Length: 238
Ligand SMILES: Nc1ncnc2c1ncn2[C@@H]1O[C@H](COP(=O)(O)OP(=O)(O)O)[C@@H](O)[C@H]1O
Ligand SMILES: [Mg+2]
Ligand SMILES: [Zn+2]
Image (cartoon, rainbow, N blue to C red; front, side):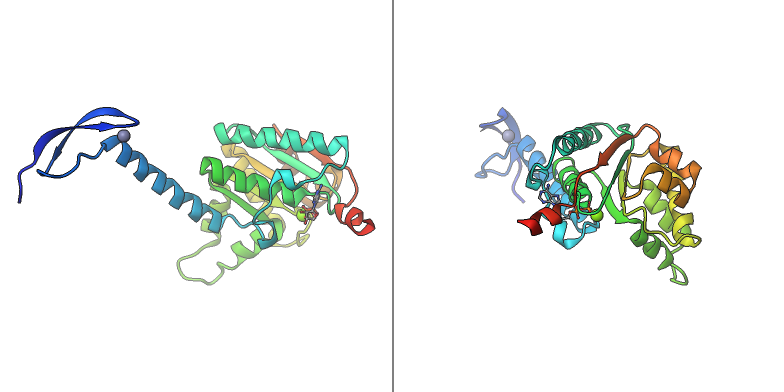
């Protein structure tokens, strides 16, 4: 074993530094290696989050800027939602978002762009899920060793940001409705930001999931209405 000797080094970024090293070795800036290590861990985390974020394959590259202008209302909705995304990236108290509108108005596209954005830029633990997929994931635990309904519910209750899409597709009297209510309740109690997306109006949602859950979904919420036409009709019309 050689003896460590003190030496001076110079880093282009961090300036001069002292190091202890084996004779003949080049001094390495500790700050630089710490930064590289931090960046490597962040990158690992982003990749892990991307793998588990739940966005469907065809939206894996979705960006806000892919959305072509449709009308002024759409531009306003996109701006407001992007504003919320930037806010929640800095501050977990950004509150909920409720996005309603007919099919093909870009709701899932926007949700996917937001998810990718928050993971890529902030390393934030965002999960996208449809209401029905959430029910499936929770039900799948039945009879599986080491997994429980309770644990799965806690998982959905604790994602730093949760986006629940297709809130209209629920088994009316079954587990889906109960699970959704539980998740809405817990996230509201914890003040965790949640995005609810549906093709139903507020009244329609109340009929489906009840007055109480809907008032929690809408509390402190940015409400965005996508009231324009199905983009796919436009594309077909050429
Ligand atoms: N303004 C737009 N510009 C370009 N593509 C769009 C626009 N709005 C929607 N799309 C595309 O149309 C398809 C349907 O959009 P989607 O987000 O799934 O709608 P929704 O979830 O509201 O039913 C997707 O492939 C999406 O990328
Ligand atoms: Mg959709
Ligand atoms: Zn350095």
